[in-house]
View 1 (cartoon, rainbow, N blue to C red):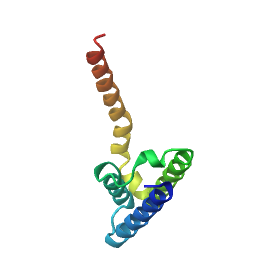
View 2 (cartoon, rainbow, N blue to C red):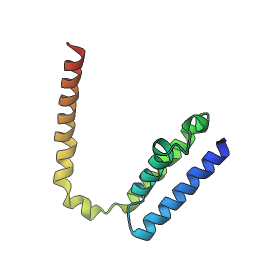
View 3 (cartoon, rainbow, N blue to C red):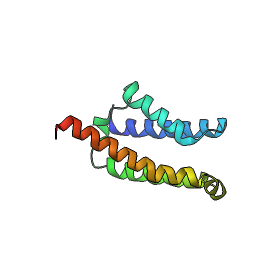
View 4 (cartoon, rainbow, N blue to C red):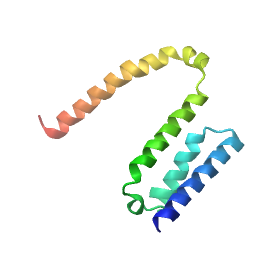
Length: 112
């Protein structure tokens, strides 16, 4: 697989996933992730070694920007206010629990 074929395949999968998400009224990020996992690690159609190089970081940066922009378009501030309590719990308690579990795992694994 050459570089241009890989890029064309990624763009085709992305457009197809976006269209399917629109058609079935699903979050587009869900189908984009499924298409990426299927084409990459699961089926091995896209070889990351071929696509590595000087173009990887610009593509990743643009992709992250598009994902965040699309997520912002779907965000409703009224819905965000309704779930403020659980979000605050995830931000505070979730981070603390993750930190303590991670630190405990490192302590046990490294035999400090």
